[in-house]
Length: 131
Image (cartoon, rainbow, N blue to C red; front, side, top):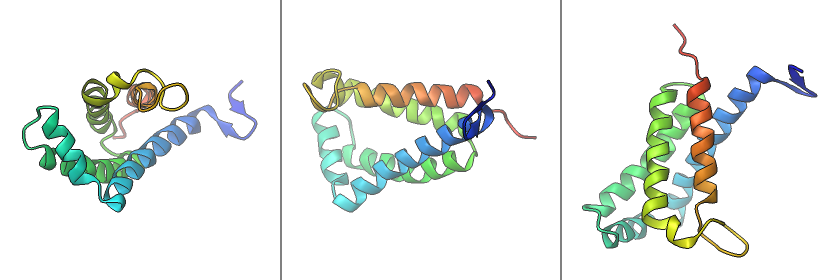
């Protein structure tokens, strides 16, 4: 079957790419609008990273800009790699200590980051460069 009742298989790849791009944008915008970028940076400092506030601002700005670029279909593999690495570091530094679940029996775990990593791998693997 090539078509779900309302969308073709090739269009599902675009849907996934746009959705993940916009999810990343929403993370950056939420951090900005809540005014928590510096707090995020201070947490990174506590975790032993140098220049935590600088890293937090870089991550926040890249989530917004690179998320929009990913949604538009440009630089897909490079942006996917960046976001995969970002989420791996997030798991190592923050989420792994909170267990697997994001909500329910545990909070702040790795399940959402793990899902995003898998989605980013699928997006990068299925992206065809246009000439």
